[in-house]
Structures are given as structure tokens and as C-alpha cells.
Picture 1 (tube, helix red, strand yellow):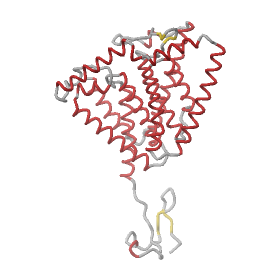
Picture 2 (spheres, helix red, strand yellow):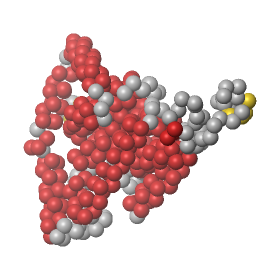
Picture 3 (cartoon, helix red, strand yellow):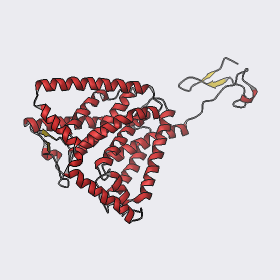
Picture 4 (tube, one colour):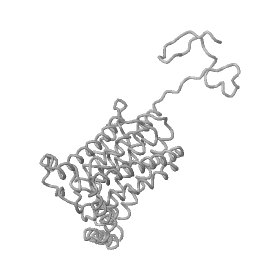
Length: 367
């Protein structure tokens, strides 16, 4: 049922956003604004866990259908989950916000404080102490030069180098100041680092690995067909998809993803910087970031905002295609020095021609 709702929502949202009177770039700005909201809630919850600041727990965790893990700790460090059910879900969302913000800033766009959202989302993600978030950010950093080369934006490579140097310098200075002011942070940071690197030895990791192994065994038992949607729940995305929809379904999803990515890249190259290109540039990294996080620790991608991002990407591509299809070609006037094969475009210029940006008629004085 949830899959049907998400699919119907995707189709309806994509069709609605294709309308030319909708400012689709404002919807992307709202997506970045949601990142600022999550960052603010992370800071608020951190103040509640550390300093006893009042926190609206009943407001954010009012759904009884979700088991909320809002009291987890990593040694002496509280794990922050903001308004999400667990820290890993919060880190997954912040990773897509971070990747999207980094890419549009590298491309030269200036959207709603995206430059400041980069360090803010990175700091909030660090407060979750989520291994999923850390690995996802590492994968996104590795993908940045690959994306720059694949899109032909070679100038972005220099921006990536400068961004990494600035980020390393700011992080180093911040760590130095923090260690000097609060030396008790060092043992806590060391514990978080050890728990992250030794994640494979934890009981939770072994349990999740066993669930994924059992899910993959279903692929062979069903001869690659899967047991059907909703009949099995794995620990990560790929074992979950393979065990439910089988090899045929996964191949179909990969074909859809490839066609969507290819259409987005072609549209991006064909249009100058503008609203649709901004949306394409910003949403592809966000979707990739969410998929990377889901492949690590999420059995499904069932959040409605993910399908809204896909609908926005499809709508941006469709808007450009519709604009090209409905564009009226401008008439070309023949000149006496024009070669004869090109003179079949229009006859010899008449005394009246269409001129000016407003399309009014005026008498031509040049023959």
C-alpha cells in the first residue's frame, strides 16, 4: 500500500510541477530550508541532552507507530536524532543535504545560504555519531571529482581542492580550540572514533549482516524472482530489493535510474544556468546521497520526500522538453549576399517585418 501511495504521489507531483507557472526552484529552496530546520533541531536536542534545555519531545515524537531511539549514547557523547526515529535516519537526510549544497556551491550557484549550510549540516551530522552518515559522506567526497569529470565541469576540480583545504583548515582550528578549552572532549571523541572503526565487531552489525545474508538466500530459493513486495525485510537496500522483487525487478529499476540520469545530463548540457538547471544540479546529488545511505543501513526508501525529489527532477526535465517543443522558430530574412540554397527559407523581405522584443510591426526601411 505504501508503495502504491508513493508511486501515485510521484506521478501526480511530476505532472503538477511540469506547469510553467510554478517556480520549481523555490521548491528546491524549501528543500534546503528543511536542512536548516533539521540542523536547528539537532542543536536544540543537543542542548537538551547536555545542558537540560527544554525540548519538545511530545511534538516531534508523537507517532506511536515508530520506535523512537532518542536516548542513545556513544560513551559519554549523546547521539542526536533530531525529529527522526533514530540517529542513522537523521544522518541519511543530512548527508543528502550536505552533498546537494556542496555541489551547487561548487557550480557557482548562490541559493539561500547554501555556503553556510555546508558546515552547519556537517556539524549536525557529526553530532549523530552515525557510522552510516560517516561512510556516506566519505563516499560522497570520493564521488565529487568523478562527478566533475563525468559532467565536463573541469573547473569544479579546482573548487573541490580549495573547498577541501578550507574545510580542513577550519576543522583543524576548531578542533585545536575545542581541545584547549574543553580537554575532556578528547576521550569522548576517541571513544566515538573507536566505536565507528570497530563497528564490524558489534552485535548490532552482526545481526544486520545475518538478516542480509538470510535475505540473499531467498534470491536463490526463488530462482531470482523474489518473494514479492512486503514479504521480507532486510537490513540494507540491495538485499531487500533482491529478496522481494528479484533480479528482474532490480534490473528494471536500474534501467529506469539510468534513463533518468541520462535524460538529466542531456538536459543539463543543453540549457544555460537557470531554474531547471539549478534543480537538476541540486537534486541528483541529493538522490545519490540518499541511495548510498539506504544501501548501507535501510531496507527501503519509503520516505515521501525522496519521491518528491524524483518528481521534481522529472518535472525539470519535462519542462525543458516542453519548452523546446512549443518554441516558435524566429523568421529569417534573406539578404542579397545569401547563397541561393538558403533562399528557400523565406521570400524576399516585404516592407513589413516583425521587429523588437514586444513583437510589434514596423515598416522596414532596408531592402
